[in-house]
Image 1 (cartoon, rainbow, N blue to C red):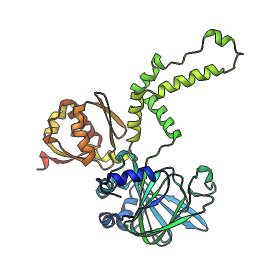
Image 2 (cartoon, rainbow, N blue to C red):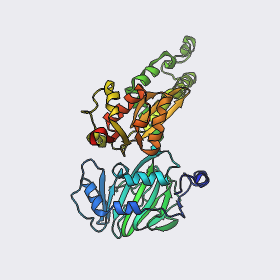
Image 3 (cartoon, rainbow, N blue to C red):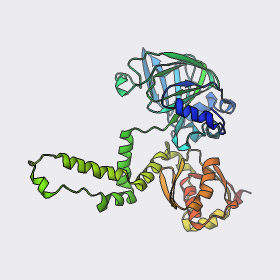
Image 4 (cartoon, one colour):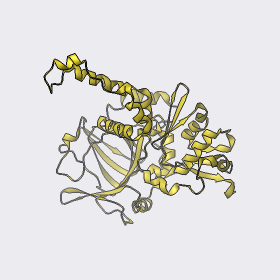
Length: 396
């Protein structure tokens, strides 16, 4: 909601409002580029694609019904709400919008941008989310009702086909028009009803639960060779209490000492900074729609990394694929680059090109003196579709 230089305003929001309460922002955003690009026709075309995650929620016979795409539609019927996930992966205007107004949050924290489009009365019922969300009104109006929050999954209606609160008692409301923004923290019930032709963008912020993190960490350790070797070392092997202590308890009795020892071993694993850094970087940069990169591969151009230097000589500018997620971690002189769920061992020299690429989403590699390891990483990212060639000698 603020230009990048408004550090004090951003800090005040994070200190006073973030994760605490819903808020209607006083400032209107410039949504002109989004309104002209995200037409009903454009959204309908997107909903026809197999790779795009879309759904329509309608209210029929006193019940909400949900149907998943792809859809063969040109227009949205009355009382239907078309919802399309991951718009940031398809429209550069959305990436620019996020860079302009949401740069106070790390880009890898943004889960996705969802469009909700419908005519008069369209809605998806009263619900809550497990993550923070910024609701940006692009066209039309939407009437929002909100409660005081504190909801868990136990509050959901288990007879409904969609996520609905069984009981919803709103305590305040707001009418949002083009350019208005509503922030809703996790657990706060909210219900939006379209007035006129309404297009709302929901910018969801990644907020993984403890269950999700533990599950993913276990999968990562099982599949990643370096993590597997780390936890298989003698340092983390469980050790029993003394033989004397074992004989003092009846067979089958878990002593308190044994549980405390187990707790100590598990804590030691979770305190392994290098392991957690590798896992978290890979976890938080996993793409929401990994299949989107398939058609971007340039394997015929880059087959082996030993060709990287020759190949990059013919490439001038490269861009981040719109769906690519980046992060990096620095520990002493060690640098790890995270791209779309993959970790690349780098050096401080890699930050010379990686940080500008992360900040600006484009890079003129001919202006950089890249060493061979950096060239190999860039070549692999091109081959995986995380980067795309914008300008090369072949198309001059």
